Amino acid sequence: MLRLEKRPQPSQLWTVVTPILAVFLTMIVGGIMFALLGKPPLEAIKVIFWDPLFHEQFAAYSRPQLLVKAGPLILIAIGLSIGFKAGIWNIGAEGQYIIGAICGAGVGLAFYPSESVLIFPAMVLAGAVGGWAWAMIPAVLKTRFGTNEILVSLMLVYVAQNVLISVSSGLLRNPEGMGFPGSRNFKQWDAAHNAELIANTGMHWGVVAAFIAVIGAYMLMSRHIMGFNIRLTGEAPRAARFAGVSPTRIVFFCLGLAGLLAGAAGLFEATGPAGQITGAFNAGYGFTAIIVAFLGRLHPVGILLAGLLMALTYIGGELAQLMLNLPGASIQLFQGMLLFFLLATDVFTNYRLRFGKKGLV
Image 1 (cartoon, rainbow, N blue to C red):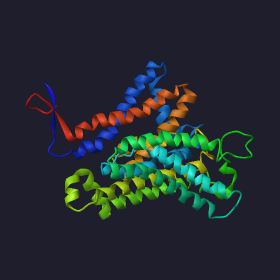
Image 2: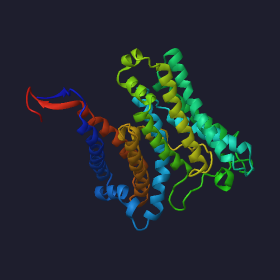
Image 3: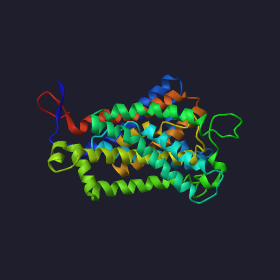
Image 4: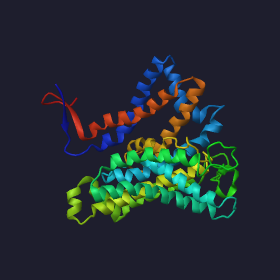
């Protein structure tokens, strides 16, 4: 009889192995899914994971896109991971991402057509503050009224989406856009455009911010007393309170930091790859970043690698739809499998499989 036996302490080996195992299981089950759809499974896996980097026709375009897609995922996931470490479950980064983009774009458009060098920094600051302010709603409700931050932050995503639709066809609509919804195109306004810093690399200020966030998060969690307090709060809440750690302060810090980074990511995306604010601006980065955070084991370096991997599935998924005519829903399901298998295999980090009373299987 098979049974799970709790380990005396989490297995360091399984902590490292489970993300790799989850990727392989996703490939296997995803291949079966593609076969059921009537597509060659090995070819589909090759298109998703290999062709974006090495295909002689598409690689020149796809490689720069790797950083473009990974930048917001990493930036948002870093903020989420710090909260998750403290046991604070912010599921509303998508809403903070949207509001950050709206606030940053609104500040910039208020000064159109100025070419001041201060325009873009002001937009970044406004975007970060907008995301922070949106995250403060669940923070205040949790600390003052004991509400569940999961539900509040998630419901606020739908509020943000409706705000986005409203401003793209109203307050921020391009007055020269012939009545079509959507803001001015920031790519046509140099002062507000988040352009590539190095041509044909995909490197823009959002990617730079993501790398800085990785370094900053590593230093915070491993070298700063706040990082210790965050880990202590997540692992032993009662011990944290006895040690004088303020739960309220941790909630505000973690939710605020996540909102700030998500808001900045939204602004970088709106002024860079997306180019404008539209009703369909949000691309689901806030939700996908949750997968990235857990796939990276809530560790900054792991999140960096997981963000690049997830970006690869985005680009490869688009290629698979183009080359193999795979439905978009199958690609989204394929990406979701990563989190499913990670959570499934993660059981063995804290438990070992036993057969009967003796014998490790």
